[in-house]
Length: 511
Image (cartoon, rainbow, N blue to C red):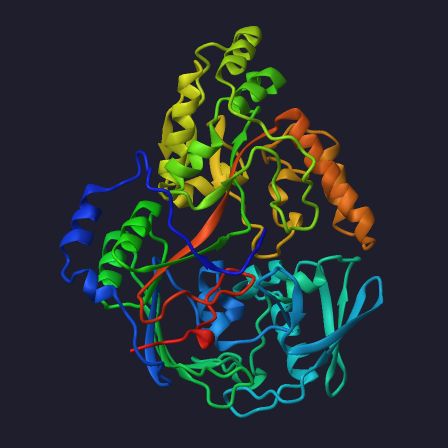
């Protein structure tokens, strides 16, 4: 379930994750519990610094290469629609919308919005943004991929923009929640203008973005006047920066560090991330994975409650049933979960003649701890498993194209579209791509649901897809992780949107 952001204490048992060096930094970098006690009067002109291991690669949201830059774009730009904390589409720049036919939707815009440049928002501006991204310029390829089905946009009035898709698209509104609107007069500028609560004053590429309050924004910032978004790649340094007061809120810390900070009086804000922690079983590499008994044994070998406590630091929900979590369209609460059953797993392995089967797990450094936990469970039932860490540049083709390893630990990213369509790796494969699941009706249903506008029919298709994976034990589903932030007491619990991103304009600062 996607719920309001809440402060929570992770469970204390964290096995195999803690870092001695980081513990030393946290305990010895100055200050005491009193320095994190907070309190005081609310201020209206605060300077707040947000930090994570990486930030946007470009100030132009159309040229951003990954979702890392979304923390920046959400402060400077607006979208036609957004997700609220409950995961429901709500108005933003568009006050209403209407599906004219299967491939056409019209959006009516707010009439009180200006860009930080002083130009007024109108339908021509929105259409120009769509046209730019669909121009074929490779610089915009990532954002064009988010729009996917969109073929064109045009103004049909001063405040009405018509968006046309090349096929029926049941999640067009979801796509529009990811599309940032820029003042067309600033296309190509060093600092493109948006209509959000902040505007850029300085940028050090890949290092830091300095922002200040946009006094004319239709969603103004009351407490925060100046905002810094900073990259601190090393998690140890990132934790130290928060502990010493150099930054006010951080994202990207290991779970055990979050727990230690919380014990020292810092705030934890967590929210379901809209992703699934999984291990893919690649039968193209290990033919014995075609045997459903082997796949079932792998699923029964994992204690998911313990996995969440140990590998995720308590920040997540055990999941042994399906990709989507509660609150997402197509979630099926009737599906059984694979529970931890060591004896049955060993029986199945013996029946399949898979004792001692070598099952190395490839992943990246980011997921080293949870992958090692999975390997430990597999070794305990008689498989032989170890974790192979690949650089991200190597792991991406391993995941998307062809792997030499039978197991792949990764986390899906359906938080962006909040829809099953985000996880295309389980759908039909292109020539040369490996299958992440057995080839069956799942792939046909995946294609069908992408153009199904009848919500009941589409939900039934998605639930049928989940049932197929569940029955065949085709994927090792482990947990639904949380997005976790740590923050100083002066900013307290962080306000998050339905996309799990910080709404800096809503931060309340006390001094």
